[in-house]
Image (cartoon, rainbow, N blue to C red; front, side):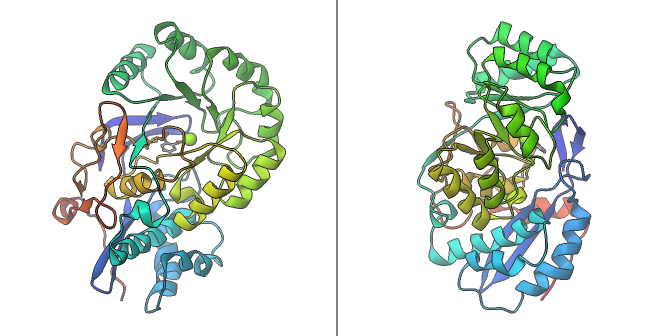
Length: 356
Ligand code: OSB
Ligand code: MG
């Protein structure tokens, strides 16, 4: 699926998504899940190829022809595979979709969501010029989004923030570095404190907690961890050593709803706000993100914006839409609440494999 506009982070530019979807048929119902990994192993080691392999050779054989009482049982069965959380999440989340349909409940309600409307922010990538970035921020503010996140890296940081703050002095603003810095940059990162950012996301190593704790003790801006948190246990350790004050939860990165719910509960018990991250998902993954964001601990606006920001035509009906006050209404119909459109997927499909 070609993106409407390229998306650039400190690890590179994406113009086109290649997405693995999982369609599960059980007891006359169909559930959907999305593997949210990038095309290249830059955000994490997972790619569409590794996900296909792990699903085909391990997770699908372990899941087929078994009686499942609940989607919540699946995570334990997947435990022998170390990592590969995005492959796991796609299949587990499809089963949550089926369970919600079986019980006649909206997915949000099945996973203990309480909100009827969720607050939304946008993530704006690195642009060709600061002028382009300022124009994009202006447009998204006008659309009603409740906070703006911009991507930063060394050389696209202090000056850019200065220009943003000159024009938008009180805008709820944050920065995401996607691991572009090291502890050698502490002085540079400390200079971000003056911009009154809601948080700085994942400034240091993708697999690090300790250095983030060191950095957090030097910064007044809260650190939010993304790449470093793969499980409730990672979150417990991060909180214990003070590596962050906020956590971004992504269903794929943490391995599905079971893990995401536990992580949410742990953060809530510890007074750590969470929000739902995005991975440039198609409508399928986007629908799962909407359901997750209905949980009560998701108090900060997430990176779940309208389908139209990414796709000329999304693969679900209706598409995800955002209100003029920057929210998404949580669907009230059973299951995902959005219908995957097979006819629209067909011409986009490069490969298909069935198991049964
Ligand atoms: O770090 O949050 C991130 C996209 C791809 C990989 C990593 C990230 C992102 C985003 C975009 O920030 C969020 C979105 O709009 O889907
Ligand atoms: Mg991030």
